[in-house]
Structures are given as C-alpha cells and as structure tokens.
Image (cartoon, rainbow, N blue to C red; front, side, top):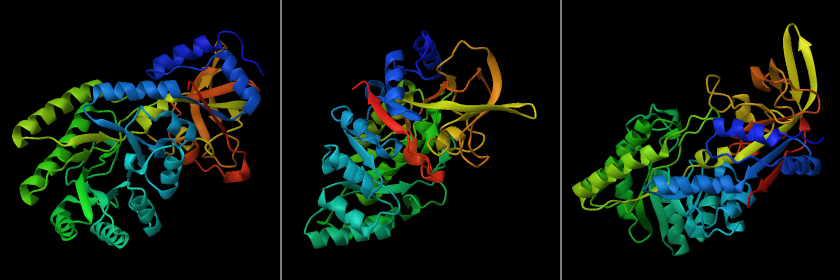
Length: 412
C-alpha cells in the first residue's frame, strides 16, 4: 500500500510537537520500507540519534556512554562509534555484541547485579571496566584477576542512603540488588586495600533510577554522588578518578523531557564548587539510553481489522505488546504517560475515539485506550513515535509465535 501525499508533512509536524529533534522518514522511504520488509516494522534514524548525542555532549560537563540495553541494534552500535566515548553493557551477550560492532573492551563499562563467573572472566579478558555490585562480587573479581595474573579495572557501584523521588523508577536509598549500600563503604574499601595490585579502583558508580525529567531531581542525585566521592577521599584517602552518574535521563512520548542544558549548567556549577573544596574533580560519566535513542525510533504497524463492541470502536493491528511492551504501558506502570499513536496513511481523516489493540490473545494487548486519531481503516499504517528505546529487546517477542518485527536503520 502506498502512502498518500501529505503524509510526511503531517507526520513531521506531529513529531516536532511531540518529540524535539525527531526527523521523520520520507514518503518514499516508508513506502519502500513497508513494501520490502512488511509490517510491523521499526525504523531507527541514526542521524537523529547522533544529533541527540551531540546535544548532550554540548550540554553536560561529562563523558557520554550509550546504554546498550536501550537499543542493541548493531547498526546503531556501529553508527555510534566516534560519537560516544563508549558503551554501557549489562550482560555477556551485550559485551559480545559491542565487540562485534568494533568497540574495544577498554571502551566498555559493565554493570549488573547478576554477573556470572563466565561473564566476569569474559570482561577481564577484554579489559572491560567492571562496576561491582557487592563486596562478594568485588572479592570474586579480585580472585579471578589474580588467577589470570592481571589487574581488574573496577568501580564501586554504590547505593546512597539518599532517596531519588524525582525518578519514576527510583533505585537508590532503598533495599536493592543494585550496588553496595553506602553504609558498607568501609567494608568494601577494606577489601579494595586487601587486593592492592590486583584491583585498580578508578572511582564510583551511582545509578539513581529511571525516567527523571526534573532538573532539581537530577542535580540532587548528582550531589549525593559527589558527596560519596568526597567521603571516599576524606575517610579512606582515595581520590575517585571517575564518577559514573548512571543514566535515567527522562524523555516521554508526550514531549516532556529532562532539560539537559539547564541540568548541565547546574552540574557544572556543582563541580566547580567541588573543585574549589577538594582541589580536583573526578571525570564525570553519563550512560543514558532512552533519552538518546527513544526519539530516533518509529514503530509502524498495519490495521488488520476494525469492529464495534458495545459502543466501543476497536482497531486491531498486526503488532502489539509482543513487539512493543512499553507502548502497552507495561514499563512504568498504569499511570505513566502512553506513547502517542499516529495515522500515517490518512492523517487528514475525520477524527474518532477508539481503542487500539494488537493481535494477541490477551486483554493486556492495548496500545491506546480511548484515544482520538484520524479514523483508521483496514490497511492503514499506524505509527508510534519515540519508539527507539526498549522496543523488541524489552518485549515478549515469542508470545503466540508471531514473526519478529523488522528493524531498519536510516540516516547513516
């Protein structure tokens, strides 16, 4: 099915209103892509992703890494070389994928609470920086490095006592499998000292949580992290060469997002104050995924059925939560803003209120409940913007045996 004239202009205008920096595919591109690959289809625009990286690098006084978990597509990982300083990986599979895409182990940072011995050995073999999540893991890393006759590059991932309420998914100040509780810093440092010559501690890692759109909340979490660096030096005589501030920079499909320019100005003032007090400042690292990648993606599905049921208009697509769990509201809870829906084929049609669902045999497969959009007809293409993060890799793609969605990179 070809798309009528005017599709791209309407789509671009809607995207600009919804997601700053989005560049939409042309009519010819969408027609060719859906004709070649069918639907459902993910389209990732590498030029948008690079623009997001450039904006963040200019705004923040920090070295930028990309969190592979947000979107592990190899076309994007290869296309980010030379634009970000490295990658954040969270499994041996992501580590292997990063290496396959041309990244060196020295450019990778590996975090996660359940690293297996095989994964630790794999990381050590490639000189990957390890964020250790417990004193037990620290000792295991030291033992493995000693057996290899090498040195492990390590950061202590800490769980501060301070909470991070501005993050929609708070991950500090609460009991957590992630990181070493701040109260255990002394115990961890005793083990670091016991492993001198085997463990090279280059600093700390704090991941406050996910989806923070508050400048004040971001700055408060950064302040708590810098306080831990100061404590490390005051109490243990160790200067943190690097401080990984984690990710969690918020961006919502509604257009709400962390103002990285405002956050960057406040962060710069904070580190200037730290430098005056301490005589130095650690290199800051940021490892966002969603903020960078979400606006660079569009999910496209085709209408396969429409029906009326007891006063409700249903629109059924050939893809749903099996491909895009986040769009069905199963990432941040029922009260989180849903991603918007667009009628790509007929943006000027009469608007109706309808419920848009996927093809799965479960009432959970709802992409839009009571949404207003140009009336979809069988064969129309619907699009979900801001879909460049936590798409297929976060979704139950094997449920019911539907084919995997195609994933295509443009803008290289």
